[in-house]
Length: 232
Image: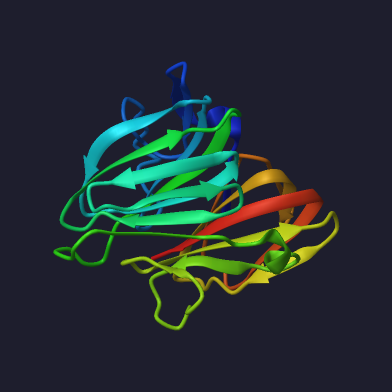
């Protein structure tokens, strides 16, 4: 089953420095039919103005994945971590028992990110942070795992949950397959371009909620960059 969630149907709020769109209930936006998708709890599509950002604030017991679509985001936390993550790259913060962090766009250009929250499968661990570049050439025409809760995904950033975040860049006409399994929940968003899943067209920044599907087949209508969460 594929449930299309068009971009113009998303909740959100424009705070001036931040234009946020919410695929799931978040902050002042609440839709009882869009609270979570399996253990995927949040998918925010954030546009952050230059020289602005999220000031220090706390989190706990959440896996927070940031996929940078344009620009860059600079992270700093009370664990002593600091790093700049550029477009196409990923950072992961396991909030664990508690962490306080900031995320700023220190660039001269607008930064656009997907911020993804997944409910952890365990609690009580110390917080952790990591970031990694994922060259788009390495995921050309195929899905590559960016972050994973499984030990055999050695090249991926670790997360403490039964989930995997994968991405692909497809040229127009290319098809990529991902063996998701009928017992899993998938949520796919094109960062750019447009794709089809079966006979359903998914445009840039639309969401596609996927269930009861053995193998996901995605075909690009135009050059596309896609992100998928494989959730429990």
